[in-house]
Amino acid sequence: MHVHSISTSTPIFSFPSPPTRENPRNLNRSLKLKPIDRRCLLFSLAFSATPFFLASYLLESPPVADARGLLQMPPFRLSNRYYLVRAGESEFETMGIINTNPVSKTSVDNGLSEVGKKQTVRSALALKEMRACEGSCWIWPSITQRAYEAAEIIASVNGINRSNIVPEYSFLDARGLGAYEGKKLDALAKVYTSDGISPSIKPPPIDDGTPNESVSDVFVRVTQLMSILETQYSGDTVIIVSPDSDNLTVLQAGLVGLDLRRHRELSFGPGEVRFVDAMSIPTYKQPASAVYKCSNPPNCN
Image (cartoon, rainbow, N blue to C red; front, side, top):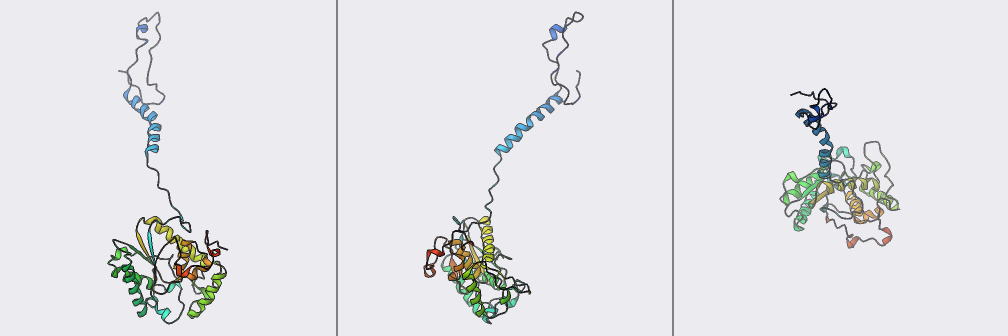
């Protein structure tokens, strides 16, 4: 048998020479095929079949899951159940001093005061009464000392394994108040007066590393947090533990479509617990006018 070399230029089928007077037998062989080289055939079939199998793979492969991206505020719906908790009073709050510099957020001095610990136990019991962790739940505290301590107390009282505590390293930092850092808590009145004028007004800056965040800045952070939670979990219960009130009031205002200039009306006391109801604002803090509703926060002006 004559063997062809493997080459794309070699024809798979080879016909004999036409019949001639010198060789009339070619007439009888003119319709017969020469033996086919198997290696040539397999190579050609593989080459010609590749587009078919590739197309079949692309058609049959499961589509890539759509990324949900950044959560839109107010959301159409929420995939999880959320409880918002403000950590109990801190040592600095006991002294009446503003402390928002992230450099010191893990300091022991930034932990819960004795009063704060009692407030947090009450919040943990409130969550238990609300059956927040019935079955299971995830606890997402700021890495700030007082918030993480509060998360541990909540986990202990509700029988939640510490592996279900997920520390948040930046999106739940206490709102940075710039030049008001180290001032008396009375200075917060000036901050909230500015908030009522525009969510874009920042506290005066300072050069000690303390951010000076506007309400809009906080809104960006908490929206990023919710985007992560809504992507990472589905049908779960998540307890968000914040070291301050502003993270939670801005978050709830965004969820319910309340003008961010009025976020202060949703103020959380130390140790307060609130179930997120994206359909309404608590009646005892209902805004006076529908003018303050906002469909596209933080652009509410």
